[in-house]
Amino acid sequence: MSNQKNWVADPFEFNDPFEFSLIDKYYHNNKGKIEHFEKEHLERIKSIEDEISLYGVVCYSSDYINNLLWAHYGDNHKGMCLVFDVPEEKVPSLYKVSYSKKFPLVGITEKSESYKEIIPVVTSKSIDWSYEEEYREVFIMKNMLNDYPGELTEIIFGCRTPFDDIQIVRDIAISKNKDIKISKMHIAQNQYQLMKGTTGNNMEIPEFWKLKNLKM
Image (cartoon, rainbow, N blue to C red):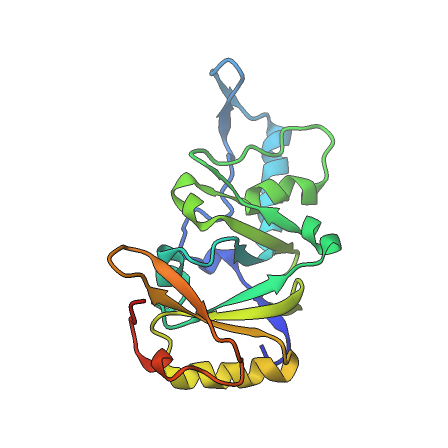
């Protein structure tokens, strides 16, 4: 955060073993019959697999309130969510993830561009992950830092984030953007739902934010 950059991660280290999977031996045609790839198609797919191993991604979501996202990616509700204002010209570089029961099919056209063929692979996941409502930035490199996709406008802390951590991160954030919003998730009363509360003054963190699993 201090350098205003995101980490471009290696998808092969993610918690989903099916990341970057594609149909690589045979497929079902429009009539539902099995078609085996010709030799040149197999060679094309192999080259895509070799190239795709170099790719990295930054993952985003359009849903900051989902309980499972906080549990899986928010350090068991002790982490934080960064909210960006993405400029219009940057939006096309954010690919919406497609969710399916089958691997994507690529490499069967005579003329193709590797990047365009690879995008469906790096932005496809099992339908089991559809709750994430994920978007991805795709890079032909990984394990590096890259600029934020837009201005960091808000930080949302988890319902279990330690108070000291909130203050430390708040101070760093304000040094970059004095108008940044500071928010925290709370547990809803009488239902399995998270709710967001935002402090009216980002210089003053409410004392009751010290309470873990606070219900509101």
